[in-house]
Image 1 (cartoon, rainbow, N blue to C red):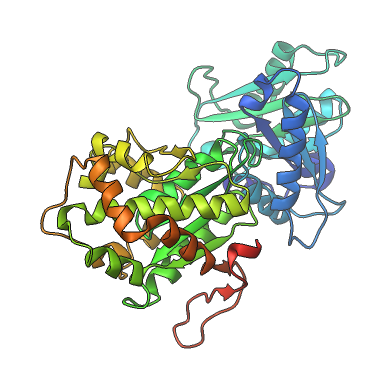
Image 2: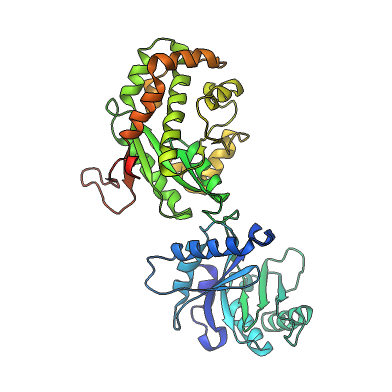
Length: 430
C-alpha cells in the first residue's frame, strides 16, 4: 500500500472525489506536425498495458497530459494497479495517483486537506509547499492565489511550516478543462518514445547482463523488438533457454507481445572449432551469429540488429573486432551500451529487474568456444577466408530454417517449476 493510499483510505469519497491516474508526457510534446501520431501510438500502448484488468480504463488526452479514468465506485487499490502498469509504458515521464475533484475552490481546498491527513510528514511537522497549475485560465483563481489558499488552509489545519524550495511534502493542484486534479507523490516513468514509433529490430539475446539492458534502451527509443537466442544444444542443457525466456518475460512489460526465437547452435560451434584458426574462432562465431540474425531479421521484417557490446569490455569488443563484425552483414547493428562500463550496465539491469535473472548460472553457448588467447585485432580478410571454408552464408540460412519460437504464456514445467516456453513453427513462416 502506498503512502498516499494509506492516507486516504478512510477519507470520505465526497471530499476527495474520484481516484484517477495522471500521466505526464516526455519528449512526445516536443514533436511538431506528427505529434498526433506519437500520441495515438502512446494511447494504444497504454490500452495494451491495461489488458487483463477486470475493469475498464478510459483514456482522456489533454495537452501534454493523459488522464486515466476508472469506473464509478473504483477503489484506491484499483487506481494503484493502473498506475503501476502505466509506469512501465515508454513515453511517459511521471505517473501520478491523483484525485479528480469538482472545479470549485472550496472542493480543491477540502480535497487537499484530506489528502495530507494521516501522512507521516504531518506527524513529524515536515515542511511543505503547494504547486498549482492552471491550464484553464477561466478558473476564478490564479495559480499563485490557489497556492496561497490551499497552502494557508493546510498550514492552519496541521501547523506545517511552508518552504518553497526543496519541501519535504509537495501538494500539486492542476486545473483542467472540466475538473481539478489534486495529488502528492508520483512514480517516475520510463521516458523516451512510445514503443513501435521507430520500427522493429531483433535483439541478439544472451543470458548475460548486457543484452537485456541493450534491449530496454532501444525499446525506450521507440523500437519494437524481438529476441534471438543462440543455444549450445545439443552439447548443453536447456538452462540458457529458460534464462533467456525469463529475461524476455521481464522485459515484455515495457512493450507487450514479445517473441523469443532460439537457434540450436552447438553443432555449428563444433564445425567452427574443427576449422582451425584457434584465435579467430570467437570472431568467426560472432560473425555467423550476426549473419543468422540478419537472415531472421529479414524474415521478421526487422530493420536492425541490437547487441549488448560495450567497447573494450572483452576481446571481441575492441574497435578493430567490432569493425570486423559489422563487415559480416549489411543490416545496421545497434550497440546502445557501447560507451557504458560494467558498473553502469549492472545498475541499469538492477533497476529494470533483469540483473537477478542474468546472474543465475547456466551453460552459455560461448563457453564451448573458449580459446586460450582470443584475437583482439582480427583481420577481415582472414575471417572471410575462414567463412568461405565453412560456407557461412549457407550455415546462416540453415540455422534460420531451424529456428524455434518460444511464446510467452503461463505454462509451467512440472519437473523444474520454471516457466516452460511453448514452441511453435520455425520463423520461416513468421
